[in-house]
Structure formats: C-alpha cells, structure tokens
Image 1 (cartoon, one colour):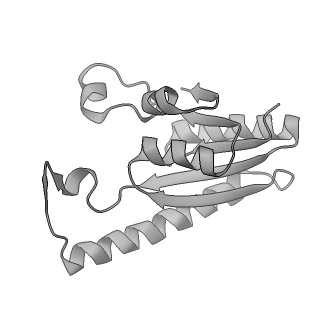
Image 2: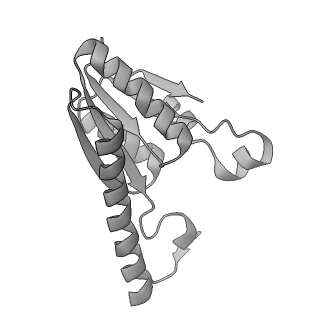
Length: 148
C-alpha cells in the first residue's frame, strides 16, 4: 500500500476532497501525508512578459511576502482541521510553477503516490488556465490518483 502520500492543494473544495481520500489511504496503510501548496513565485506567470520581466517594486515584494505567510498559515490550519491525530502529517509551502514543484517534491520526499484534485475544466477555460493535474500525470514517476 501507499505509506508516503503527497497531497497538493490549491485550497479549493476539490482539493479538500482529495485530502480526505488521502487520509483514508493513509489510515488503511498506516501511512503519512505531506500536504503541499505551491504559490506563484515572482517572475512566474503574471510577472512574466515573454523574454522580458517586470522588475518588482518594494510594494509588490511586500505584498508577495505577506501572501506567502498567509498561504502557509492557511495550509497549516487546513492540515490541523482536516487531518486526524492518528495520521502523521507535514505541511510544506513552496513557490514556483505548480506542476514542476509537485513532481520535484514527490521525488525529494520519496513519496509513493500523489493524490490531487482536478477542477474538470474543459474548452477555453482549460486552454487558458491549463491543467496542473494533467501536467503532473505526464511527468510524475509515481502513481497519481486524481479526484474530481
């Protein structure tokens, strides 16, 4: 069975459903959970303008640092509220491109399964927003269980 379970979260209801499934798996196998949130790092996404990037002002840096603190606080709170005392866990907050960081953490942490949510977007929403779950499925070297 799976004993080292990685659960990426974007704090959505879908991610909470995936976490609850991971808790069931962890209980059955006496495993542990790593709850992971990957925030957007400066220079990724909205700050990136092709080959040129916009320098960040002190205000943007301060806002980014505050958002990172709030995300870590929320991550810890969700873990404490959702994961029962009989399931060992840790919470990790990283910054970067979510699919890459999820796959990298799976390897670094020697996880044996990734349990994550998909929002089930189709059409233009999927084309514009992409699919983190799909990219993780494509690049992960361990099993990925996707819920919806």
